[in-house]
Image 1 (tube, one colour):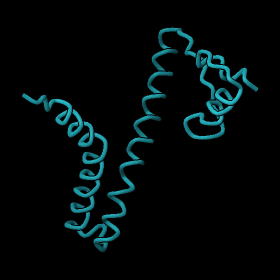
Image 2 (cartoon, one colour; image 1 turned 135 degrees about the vertical axis):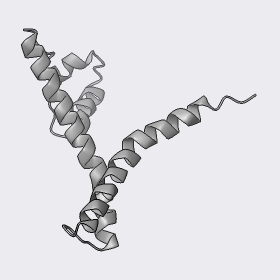
Image 3 (cartoon, one colour; image 1 turned 30 degrees about the vertical axis):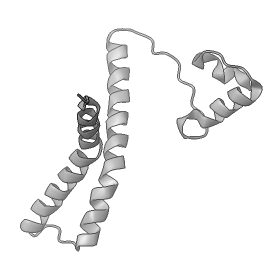
Image 4 (tube, helix red, strand yellow; image 1 turned 90 degrees about the vertical axis):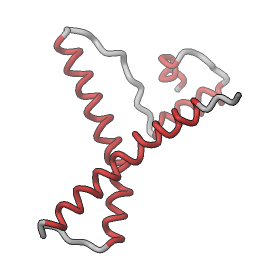
Length: 113
């Protein structure tokens, strides 16, 4: 018998990642249109719904980072240093590390310069 649990996990992940923010945006736009606050054509509603997905994740990650910093300050803890590269995902640091042939722990990536 085939195990289909991975498909259910994929459907749940896609639901959390894309459906929840875009559905929330569509419901909010519909409510605003019903009360005559903000009326817009269908293409504008679709564009706002699509753009709500990355906006949701940017806001969520920013809030998570802020919450982590506040919790660390509250417990008098020191956060692990974070290397901030010029490219998204620190791809510049990764390419420098691979081209230099140095495969060390991620904390040593900043010393590849």
